[in-house]
Length: 226
Image (cartoon, rainbow, N blue to C red; front, side, top):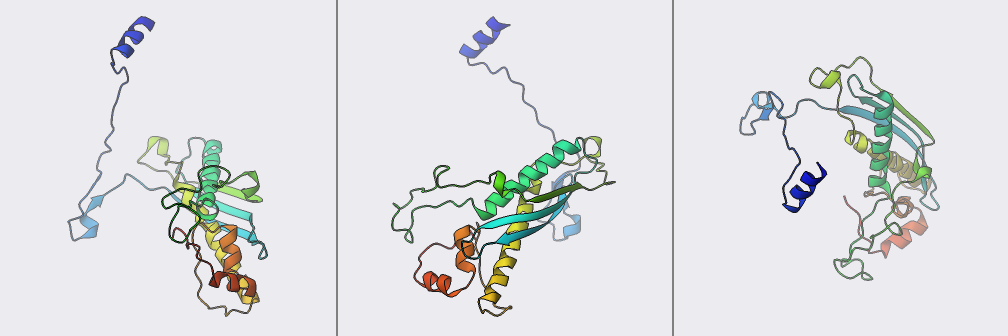
């Protein structure tokens, strides 16, 4: 066997097997004017909901997640322990995506960088979540009695679907900033913009106190992704 594999390798012969699976009854016709008759684009969906509570230091822009509650529908989970771990990891990946993982490229607003040069090339400048970023109180619950008849053992896919639930942290921070702005003298209904990723720098600058407002008037920093 070793000799056969070695011969195949040097002969550039692929010994791997490849295959594709096509689910039954999947298809979608965008040209049909009646949406209810267009078809079914996916076999099923994975659903979830999250609620997060944060604490913001208005003097530094530092933030900490005090509690996060997540409810996910994975049908009849094949392994709840593994699925909960996947939810926790994907959630934290989403938290990093919308709070600290900022990509900075050279542009007209950033004169100190060459145009097109990526500044955030390593862990020194590009930050990802660490142990201290995990919610102090982290609760994950799997929905019960929700069998999915269209998958193996009535389960549902797990992996990246919980990622966007990290956005609940983004909006919790925005609510905290809104409260800080009221304390600084702004109207409760006054509109303000925050961009993603909502880094400590952006949190501090959005709090609306005199120091932040005076500094923001002369700042040329790009707003962000959104």
